[in-house]
Image (tube, rainbow, N blue to C red; front, side):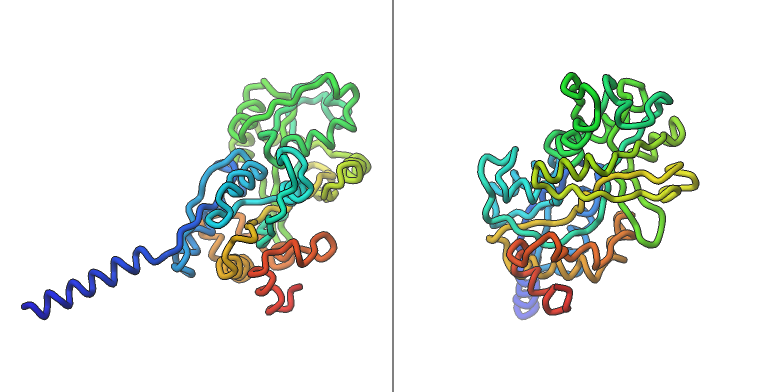
Length: 327
């Protein structure tokens, strides 16, 4: 009896120890309902099964810059949903960062998203037609916020007299549905092998009012803003019918915002290595939690040498990419 009791207590102790053994990190995940929150949640679930030595706890924020700012308060215990613009802003010390963030690192990208515009207004065909109209976009601390306006204001006559409404995706959706906004920002995930995927709010908009029409942004304004701000605003063409039949109804010029996971010099190498490995090898697992998984590919995940140096990448993630011959 005593022997069985000792054995049972030993098993209980081992089980309890095992349950507490996972090293816990927060992952600041962006706006609830957005692409970043979806893939951060998916990553947290996949790690539970495939790398149980780590635990990730998703935390909602108002967007990529806010995610990085919050994560930087505890760099040794927090990773974050990142975007190309939030990374460049951080290392350059642009707003909302009061100084360059010198310890920030890229772990890997998950999607190539584009930022584009939609409207139900028949008299708004071009960006110039937005002059004096009501434009709603996501939080000023998000990729679709002031970065998008930084491009658009160069193309809209009298834009200095306009004030965009900054909100969350639900408010963008509601503004377009109830007519309190004339034009809204829309994030769309590109795909090399299937339909391109707008954020979930788009489906609600279409179900209520039918498909909106898209507004193209002249490439010269995207490049002009990129040069002036030293920012990675990369023009991307959204082909006619890439979302659904005749949606969009013609080719639409937009700009790329690659989304992924970032960390800091303080982030453990093994965690960064594990995440890079999962991003490159477990796209199918991501599809169980988010449609974003269907658009994942190694070509998107690995930071391009054209835009990013080895020093920009976390050493743990870089070790994986080098081992696999991807960098």
